Image (cartoon, rainbow, N blue to C red; front, side, top):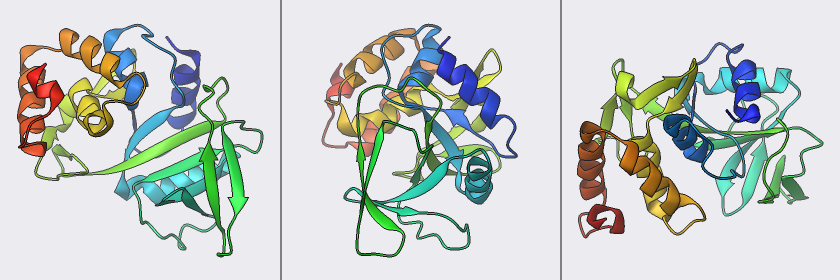
Length: 216
């Protein structure tokens, strides 16, 4: 198992919030092996745990920036002063080589540049926030698309991860990004019939005009 995921899980389980690894790392947790090199660590979390996550990551020596769109980011130093424009935050340490910051003429704001060199140390974590009801996970881009919590979040050796059908649904918006087609092909073959059927229904709702993965 990827050492960074083990280290990140050891860190995050000390916090008082729900989380699950997502993205390509979650696909690998589902497959049971490392299928490709991943650029960073992505973590699915819930909006109601956002403030606690920010405070926890700051207590562990991470800077926290919330994304504003168009490459702009706002540094969060006080949880009561957030913009909450986008659903993702970047947490990184001063020594992290993946991030470059360029100041802007706005208070605590900057232009943020991400280097896709591949993460080798636990110095960067991206959190992506979602909503949930008591029993169901809600897909961020269409909250009518839901999944039972017990099927949305799975576990591999005690490490929580987002189910592959949800990971693929998120990846479906940019399928030409490096590694995404491979993620689809490997995960879809390994998924059971119920998971495949759920993904097909979700893709058809999200893309009524059609999508390459529906055909494949």
